[in-house]
Image (tube, rainbow, N blue to C red; front, side, top):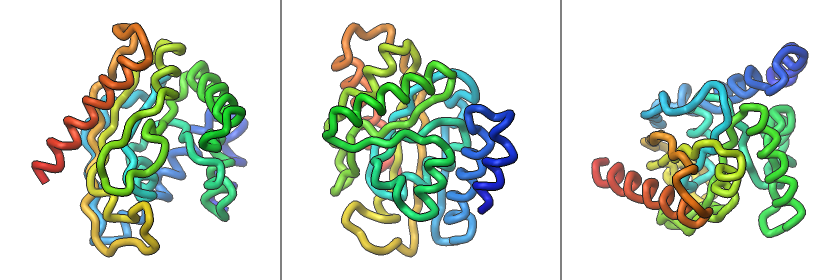
Length: 222
């Protein structure tokens, strides 16, 4: 009901839904605010824009990644599997926020997703994608798909790598219950200018290498 109220009050003057997204970010962060055993640290938030297009890409270990990344408290539109939009409450909120649905493996759905992402980027709204395509079952970084990097090259906007650690302990891929404790870390890395890369594959592998190296550094230091 809170999201519906925010949506109704702000839609006339907030065409990109920034206020509703920030409200949803606070809503998601309540899991951390009320649970003393869950801790979240965000570093590098200054690399994220308040205005202007960017493609945010993050590794993906758990459903808990969603809660954690809302803690960025910056504007963006999620790209999320279409099934999530059918969930009670959460799915309704995603629809109100005009996040971008995707049916994995469906070419028509992928095409619509790319069109919607291009629309948001053209309006100066970042999009956030998981380039692995699905959650990692063992925490190891999976191969990246091309979509996010194709968007950045076509729209001439920066890629911002984001590294998550500790989120697999909130709700693993095949887990059924929330873990009682978690220490989650978000590291936002400096933007990558795609103009220096001649093809999607080179940009994709460069960003994957950056995320893999930073993930290894954080896990070693933990």
